[in-house]
Length: 264
Image (tube, rainbow, N blue to C red; front, top):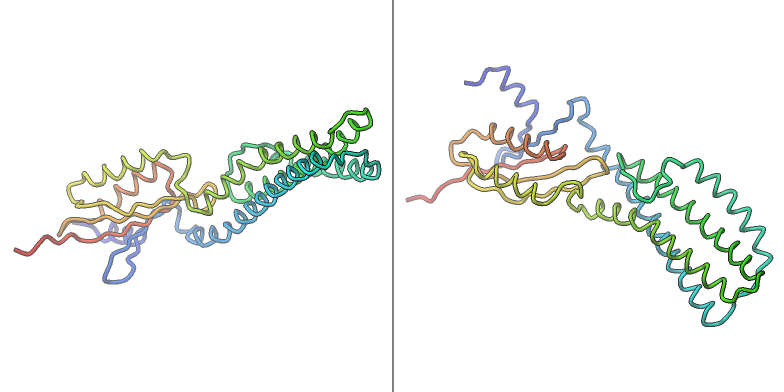
């Protein structure tokens, strides 16, 4: 028999929403961090900002490729002296910005939170602008040496470099916004957890499992469990939470329904 203390502790961890269906939520975070899911929703704005920045850089890469193709077809390569001073100044300013964001000046980076993703996108933006300025300077130098199609070559290299630089960030932000399953957890692990829960004596069926990253470093999920009539679903919920907590699912919402057999 449950003691009043145990029952109070359970009620503090699991909140019953409504009287008709029992939707029970559990989080391994402390009660003082109860507002974390709400704050995480606003943190998704930083993910959206990083995605927008990455999308802009992809368009920049595409425009550089089109410009290189146009220069090759029209044979418009020329020594643009008036752009050298602007390019050198721009490169120096951007290198200062890269130094300021030097902790994020990597292509593949582990995002601990949404701020890391946003700062990384800003750093890549500055770095891509630096590469573009360096390419312009290099093209002017090659043209001064009499190398034909130097502008086409440099624009093509810069276009590919910017594309390869921003592609990992574009994928990471897109997966979060599309609510793709966390990449650090293999799909077989989720399947194994569902089978372990379904194998419990008091469980009749497990379905509608959905898991995704709300923001970098915070994985959430929802699950529906049908328990047998008269079964104690508290033990099932604790067991379920323990399994997914080991996988890194920090906030798990579980909906339980009581299975009613056919009336004879």
